[in-house]
Amino acid sequence: MNRGVLTPSGRIKLLSLVCGALAAHASTGPGAEPLTLHTRSQSETAKGSGQWQTTDATVQWDPQKTAIVVCDMWNQHWCQGATRRVAEMAPRMNEVLQAARRRGVFIIHCPSGTLKYYEGTPQRRLAQAAPKVTPRVPIQGWCALDRAREAPLPIDDSDGGCDDFPQCKQGGPWTRQIDTLQIQDGDAITDSAEAYYLMEQRGIENVIVMGVHANMCVLGRPFSIRQMVRQGKHVLLVRDLTDTMYNSRQAPFVSHFAGTDLVVEHIERYWCPSITSADFLGGEAFRFRADHRPQVVFIIGENEYQTWETLPEFARKELEWRGFHCSFVMAGTKVGDNDFANYDRIKQADLVFLSARRRTPQKEMLDLLRAHLSAGKPLVAIRTASHGFDAKPPDSAHENWPAFDREILGAHYENHYSNGGANGARTVVRPVAGAHAVLAGIATNDLVVTSSLYKSRDLVSAATVLMWGSVENTSDREPVAWVNTAEQRRVFYTSLGAPDDFKQAPFRQLLVNGIYWALDQPVPPRWVARD
Image (spheres, helix red, strand yellow):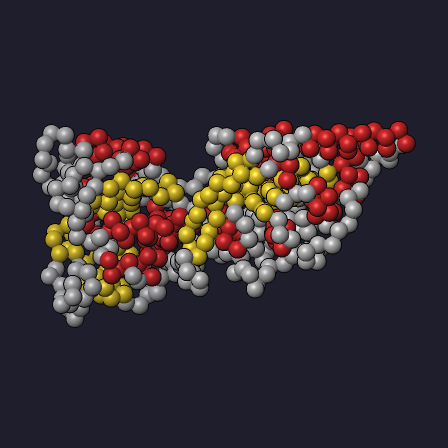
């Protein structure tokens, strides 16, 4: 792209370029193949319920009536991490722009605050030449959070959102759009209401937004989501070609990339659906190299405590929004249902979460679990996992592991007390005083549960008790939660896990903390529940 003041001959060339671009755009008219886009949105199950569901749909847009807005993909940001992520994302974005141009989509580059760099270029003059029109609602220089329409953002970005440590000094070092994104003949450059004027001039009804940052400029700029939705445009966000200014040390204390997902979900709820770059390029969606979110594989095979229901709900409400990828290896709910489906997933597990009772899985499955543990990978286990594989195999294709409680969990299960249930004495649980990470944010007062107290004896020396329990109004005492670091492996176990236990926030918090600790990740300083 050439820069500088246009000579008379240059103006003639500009007119030729504009006419050529318009002709090319017009060639994708009524007979052009439509864009097929796979959208994702969030809808409330009932107004005011606070419960949301994901809806997938397919739309077809006329490329002649579609524009892509590239938001603030600057050459440099004051935050070094943001600069690196833009540079990593830009090649994929450029491929999308190339593919969209070939289909006849109009490209509008919007690197805010850098237009002096583009002064006199054909692309800048193209935007300036668009005749002003009266918008449906006034276009603001910045469109702030609309409390009448949307909830507060799900992340705390009040510190500027730099995820580096120490945080970078704020400023405005950007001078242009990142050079990786090619600006070609027929594109336009602006950072103002000119974008809307261009769209009206060309009959653009559909707007696809990509760029940074989702919680700031992508929502608030005069050419971006809030403004375009208010103008009646059909708007889509490319959710894998965006990023947030979010510091993972701020609420809700999730990874940077999980924070981005939360903002995308916010946009899908209150403003517009989203798509991915795969709609233009095929294959998989873009993912940042540093986005190593843990794979948690739940192994569930028991007939007593309904964890086939409580654990998937726990995963959805407490883990997935935090950025964990959860999958399930499940057997039937009857005694003797020993065949677990999808056990190959254990190969990809960063952490295994076990809830089983007296099952004898396929030998191949136990081999995978043994390999996971032998590699020093973590385990979280609850309730009947202490006797999860303690049964007689039905045939040579299945296998038991009666010493699992001692070898892996670090204690011997010796049955349980007769308390618990609707008519039995309750179990009183008391956290150990101290600063262990698994107990972060958990009150030191007693937790009373209806489940029976397990007898867990002979803890190994590498085990650290976190909670003791006793039958109500007795002096009995048993460990009910501990960590075991034998064999350089992180194992967290609790004998709690009945359906009523999952109804108590401290128990769910204990499991979340245990998962973070087992993965050797910082436990969030403040636990946040989310429906």
